[in-house]
Amino acid sequence: MSIAEQRDIFNDRPVYTLSDISKSLQSIISKTYNQPYYIKAEIIKLNYYPRTGHCYPELAEKEDEKIKAQMRAIIWSSQYKTINERFKKITGDIIKEGITILCLASIEYSPQYGLALHIQDIEPTFTLGEMAKSKIAVIERLKKEGIFNANKKMQLPLIPKRIAIISIETSKGYSDFMITLLQNNWNYKFDCQLFPAILQGEKAITTITEQLAVIRSRITEFDCVVIIRGGGGDVGLSCYDHYQLAREVAIFPIPVLSGIGHSTNETVTEMVAYANKITPTEVAYFLIQKFHDFSILIEDFQNFILKTAADRIKNDFINMDNNARLIKLFSKQIIEKQQTIIDNYIKQLELLHPENILKRGFSITYHKGKVITDSNSLQNEDLIVTQYYKGKTESIIKKST
Image 1 (cartoon, rainbow, N blue to C red):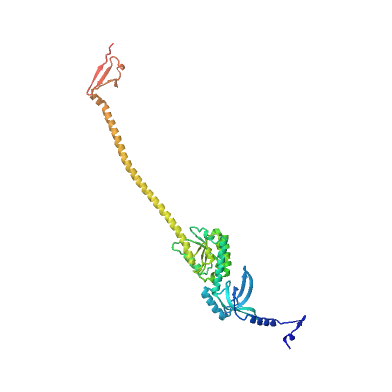
Image 2 (cartoon, rainbow, N blue to C red):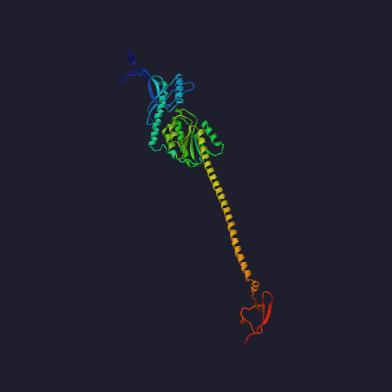
């Protein structure tokens, strides 16, 4: 009896078991898809199990951030280790969620586990290429919106003292930054506050953006924002090429400094930041240098003031010395002139002295001790005395009638 004759009938149609359908699908798929295919997809969930070493990625194709297609995949432990090591060697980071891959996979159907892609290899250079294309698109979008250089136009204070730090306390980059900044040889003082965030992967986009929003709500408390982390490969930094995060940094109302610890291609977030340094330590040196620049400016002003004051005092002393010499010279001339005038007065007084007048033959007539200047003041029989240079005589007035 054939298989068809053995099946139950319902509504004049044969009834199939689930295993019948599964086996049929398995047969069709194995015959139709009988070779590996290169498949482009995004890893939305890695599902790696360290105990067994197997990996069960969830793959998806997105359009406008919405999932257009989704499928389960398998990478057995023996293959995963080899694939992951090669991927890390070329990209600088391990296989992880949120990246677009080009995988070589066979399409398999299991009655127990359903449809899945059995991944045999992943091409690392394709992932780097996809990242590069996405990066270019984000840059062009930010430029089209006119905000690509917005943060670079912000004004960094002469002394950037109050610093909001987006990092994680356990990061070596954060530790290096704080040690360099707070233990500087010049004892410059900084006020730092940490805003913890995940620093790589898809979650970094959300957590860093959320912390920027918190800082924005307290914007008057800070002079700048610093985003710092330890080193990492280009794939580990792909989150910093994401449009949402780059845009938030570009339009942030105070300067954003980046030091996310790599020396290869700049991420978009680093490009739009006010200043980008390779390492957190260099960010610290950048801030310290701002204090140096201000210190030098103050020192220059101080030296200018001291020199100006010294020059003015020197000029005042020179003027005072010259004035003293002029006063001394003119005083001598004035004194000599006045002495001549005085000497002339003395000579005139000597010539007018009564004794000298009498010497010249003149005489002085007195009546009752008063000098007679008018004869009409005398009466008959008045006694007068005539004084000569030597001696005197007395006379009686006899007026004629």
